[in-house]
Amino acid sequence: MSRLALACLLALVALASAAQAQSDDRRRIVLTNGDIYVGVVVDGDSDPIVIRTTDGVERRFARADVAEIAPLINGRFFRTDPVKTRLFLSPTARTLGGGEFRGDLTYFYPSITAGLGDRVDLLASGFVTVGDNAFVTPLVGLKAQVYATESTTLALGTSALFAFGDGTDGAFVAAPYAVATFGDETRAVTVGAGGFFGGSLSSLDVEVSNAVVVGLGAETQLNNGVKLFVENLVGFGEGDSGLLVLPGVRFFGDRFAFDVIGFLATDFENVVGFAPIGARASYGF
Image: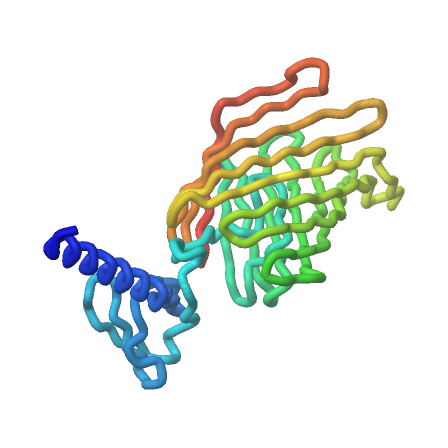
C-alpha cells in the first residue's frame, strides 16, 4: 500500500472516529415551550446552559426553560410521536403527562385529553344534534397507568357515553378496559381487552351487554416525522363477531399530528365495510 493510500485510510478512520464521538456526544435539548434542539452541551453546569447545535451555533438557554437534556433516541431520533397515548381508535398504555393537553378532530368529532398527572389522563368529547329528535351525547374517559418500565406499560381505564334527548331515555354505555404496551416510543406492540355495560339512566336498569372487544396494534417510527401503525379489533357479541382493521400512517411535528388510515370491517364471512382513507388531526398545547 502506498504512503498516500495509507495516509488517506488513516484520515478516513480518524474522521469516522470523530463522527462517532460527535454522535455519542450529541443530545436532544427539549425546552419547556416544546422546542427541540440537537447539539453538544458545552457547559451544562452554568445558568444559562450553553449548547452548540448541529449548525455550529452556540446557544444559551436559561436553566428554568430547559425541560430535558437526553441522548438521541436509538442514536437517530430526536422527536417522538406527540400522540403516544393512542393508535387511531384504541388507547395505548402510555399517558400524556402531568399538565399536558391535546385536542383531536376526527372528521367533525372533537375531543380533548388532559394529563391530570404523570400517570392519569382524562378525556372529554361528545356531539350535539339539532332539529327533530335532537340529542346530546357527552363522552368522558379516564385512564391510569398501574405499572411502567422502560419497555412495558400497563394501564386500566374506562369510557362512558351518555345520551340525553328525544327517544334516548337517558341511555348510556360504559366500556372498561385493560391495555398493555411493550416497547419504546419508536417501536411498540399494544394489546388490550374491554367489555361494555349499557342501560338507562332514568330507570337505572344497568345491564351487561354480551360483547367483548380484543385489540392488537403495532407501531414503528420511520424518522423524525413519520410513523406507521396498524390496529386490529375483534368483537364478540350475542351470536355475532367481527374484525376491524385500521392500517395507517401518522405525520407529526413537535406538537401536531395528522393520521391517514384505511378501514376494513368483516364479520368473518363477508366484507361489511371498507374505506380507502380516513383522517384525524391532533394538536398539543
